[in-house]
Image (cartoon, rainbow, N blue to C red; front, side, top):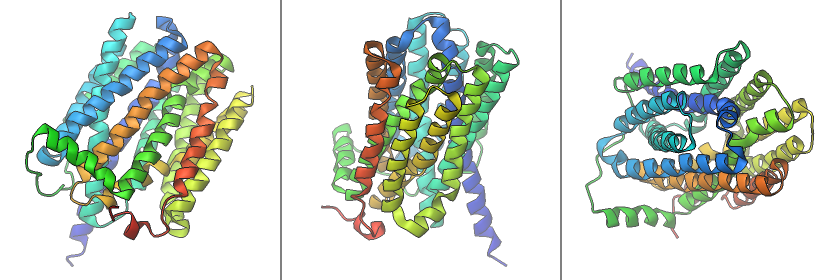
Amino acid sequence: MRQPGPLSAQRRHFLVVLLGFAELGFVSGVFTVLLPDLNAALDLGPERLGAALSVLFSAGIVGLLIGGRFADRIGRRPLWVFGNSVGGLMLLALSLVEGYGVLLVALFAGGLSSGAANLSANALGGDHERHHGTRSMTALHAGYSGGAVVGATSTAVALAVGVGFRTVYVVAGVIMLGLAVAAARLPIPPHGAAVPATNGGATQAGSLGLLRQPGVRLAVGLVVVAHFGDGALESFSSIYLRDLLGSGPLLVGLGIAAVHLAMLVGRLIGSAGLRRFGERRVVVVAGVGAAVGVAVALGTRATGVAIAGLLLVGFCLSPVVPIAFSLAGRAAPGRGGAAVSLVTVAGHGSLVVAPSLIGLLASWSSLRLALTLVVGTSLGIAAIGRRLPADGETELARPD
C-alpha cells in the first residue's frame, strides 16, 4: 500500500518539469512565426536580423553563466521564475519596438531570460532522472516540442484571422508572466546538497575540468553541432518559407508547428528507439537523416516539399540534444548543474555564431545557399555519434 506514494511524487515532478520545457517551446514557437513580421516592420534584412539574433543568443550565454554559478547552490526555482518573468517582459517589449536599438535591448533581456530558463529546465530534468532513477530527459524535451506546436499554431491562426503581430506578442507576454507566478509555487524534484561556495576562478576551473570526462566532451560536441543547425533553421526557416517560397503566414506557421510536432513524436518514441538500438546508432541515423531533410527543403521551390524536408529534419534531430544532456549528467554525478551549464553554454555559443554567419552569407549570396551549411553540421552529428561507446553507461562516466 506504500507503492503509490513515490510513483505519485515522480509523476507530479515529471509534469512540473515538463511544463518548464513546454514554456521554452511556447516562446520559441511564437517568436519564430512572428519573426518575418518583425523583420518586415523594422526593415532589417538578413544581415541585421542575423546580428540581432546573435545578440539574443549571446545574452543567453550570459544568463547560463550566471545561472550556472548558482543553480547547484540556491536551487533551480529562482532561475525558473526569473526566466519566465523577464521572458514575458521581452515579449511585451517586442510589441512596442520601433527601432533597431530598442530591439537589441529587448532581445538581450530575452536572451538572459532564455538562458536562465533553459538551464533551470535541463537541470530540473537531470534532478528528476537522478532522484527517481529514471531516464526521462528525452520525454521531457518532448514538452519543448509540444509547447512549440501550441505557440506556433496559435500564432499562425491569430495572424490568419487578422490579429496584429504586436497584439500576439502582448498576449504571449501576459501568459509568460502568469507562468512565472506558477513557477514560484509548483513542486520540483530535489537537487541534493548545496555545493560549497568557491571563488570565481575555482568555479570556472572546476567547470572546465568537467571536460576531462569523455561523456561531457561528447555532449559538448553534439550540442555545438546540433545547435548550429537549430540556430540557422530557427532564425531563417520562416523567412525562407515566406519570402523565398512565397508562402502565406498561416501555411508557414502551421509548417513550423508541424516541424515541432515531428520532433514531439520523435521524442515520444525516442526512448523505445534508444532501448532497442542504443545511443550510437540513434545519433548516427539522426545526423544522416537530418542532412537528407535539409537537402530536400533547400532543393525545391514547392512549399509542401520544403516543409516535408523540415519535418524529416525535426523528427531525426529530436533525440540528439536530450541524449547529449543525459550523457553529461551521467558523466558528472553530483555536479549536474555545472555539467548542464557547461554543455548549454557551449551550445549557445554555436547559436550565437549561426544566425550572424547565415545572415552574412545570405547577404553575399542567397539564403538558400547559406542554409546549405546545415547539411554539413547534420553530417557532423553523425560523425560524433560514431564515437559514442557501445556501452555508454560504463565508459562515458570514466575520465581520461
